[in-house]
Length: 386
Image 1 (spheres, helix red, strand yellow):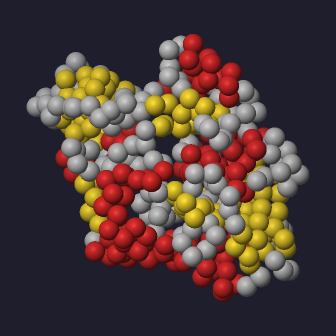
Image 2: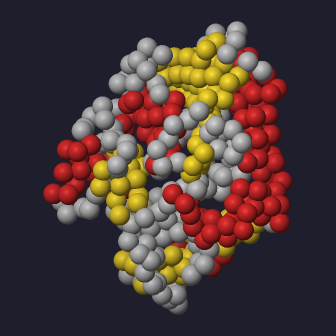
Image 3: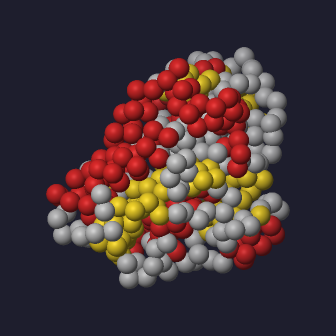
């Protein structure tokens, strides 16, 4: 089974700028999951070691990360062989990537299905590009899958990889854990939120980094979260409620590129900028289609967010910029360009265990084929004048 990655020559050129001929190893790595599936423990509700012991008592294999005490991980098993059966359910890329890891298939991920599928039918679950990701038993007929808006569509019994279904664990439902990659956890650690600080998360949904900021500050920072999408704001609020953090975060729907205009009173001690990106570092990636133009558009868009972050942070304040991609165009080039343009900005050294250094500037990088994590870029900037 091979992932379908449709990248034009311009994207390959961007990857070569980072990896040289090793870009092929990068592409191989993002097509499969990391060997560890991470969750972050909600330390305001439970001790990570106690939670790990509770999971182990139920027969669930779990480890505690060597460097981040709030990070637990589940070993990922596989790859296993799956069959291309006569009956097929076609799913979107997000459902495919989840089912590929052993999750059951729910109705919102279904794109189409064979009309002859009935309850009890054995089916193949197929992602974009014709990639078979799992076999399962239909819990609905095809017509029910297409007519309903929610519910379990296929119960998976064999997938290419296997890990505990995080969102089905009682610990998830009870707000004790949040699924989050290791590099994403380091973003909030680099921000280093402290009690009493005013902290802005500019692109906050779905709330992983926002809620981590709350926990790292002991619930005593003033956290202000922004996002532009109504649906994403709803997801953010729901996650904060589940974790018990809703009363600790002020949530606003806004275009964060214009915060200094729309919220002229806003002055932050620290700002987190995690803007939309090409997501080339996300894994496992079964299907993706990108052009050089996509990367260029992302880069210009990201600069708008970073400029605004520096405008709203107080003199002496900190801005952390992160993206779940690996291109220099969306990482070092964005940071260097905005720092030169605005002046009075110092790019600080980032201390992240296990990470590689930035390319030409002090920053942290995670490379899938080197660190067995998603690809990630993290930089920390300080505003040095009024």
